[in-house]
Image (cartoon, rainbow, N blue to C red; front, side, top):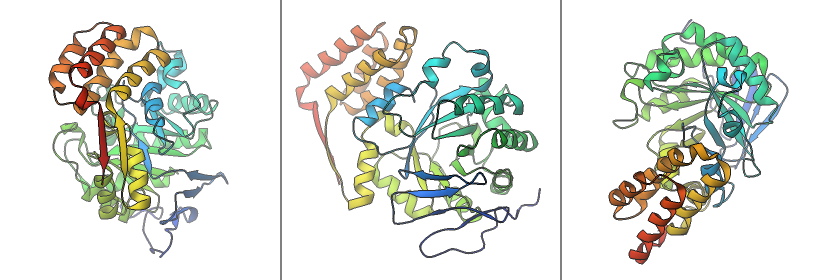
Length: 370
């Protein structure tokens, strides 16, 4: 595949919007000053993203419980589900209903699917489309060994032909916005190969790309190389969403300004600070933010939502995941999480958290402002 595909060569940068050409068909535009950007797809459908901010798909974390907790601070982001196994969806997997359930607060929910069989991935798209999602995302970024060994996730970066077949099949299967989440390489950061992959994705008709600018081999270590997001944005003519190391509204704006990307995806930072999207919205709109949070109440609400939205057999594992990140909001975080990790039910975890704040009432209320 030639590096400079007709679908991806950037011909012209407009002053007020960026025209997005894919196989010489205008697929969309991004209004730089507004809250929405639109994609005009090959299916004659106009899609409006309600925000520049996206909750990342995180296994065992991007649950309805977390999404509900984030929504308590307002409707400021496009949410992603946990990574869904396409084959499990078709066979009626154990967690299928829990992981694909949508609620009133999931106004803009994107399902992420993983697999390496084009036919199975396409059928998963069809079935998920019946749930009326905001869109569907294909996982080509997960670095976890048990996923890579199956040829899923980041393994597809080493098999571009199979990756193209998957995207082609999924594009034919759904008229919903289709995106792909990728890494900047597998063994190492590889700009040339990354752009070749992006060119293929454009040719196959995806609507936007999400880039986590770390190679798969290093998982989440080292610093994300946001220069690669800028390189990708300058190369393609479809929207690019950047992901990696965003922990505050300030870092979100800095990265968006530096790279010119069209949106910011936040993962672990949104678990520790579920109000981060509200802060981003205020900061991008007004140049400042001022949010006061009752850390105790937010902590307990997160646990309550796990009980409300998840089945009993997932309570312990999902609560431990949530608490591992959220406990960083308190001074004695290590001690608190150690106690939580030794608890075997939600009632015990609630009491551990409540007890901590009874001993440390001065940590209950925190103000976040810029």
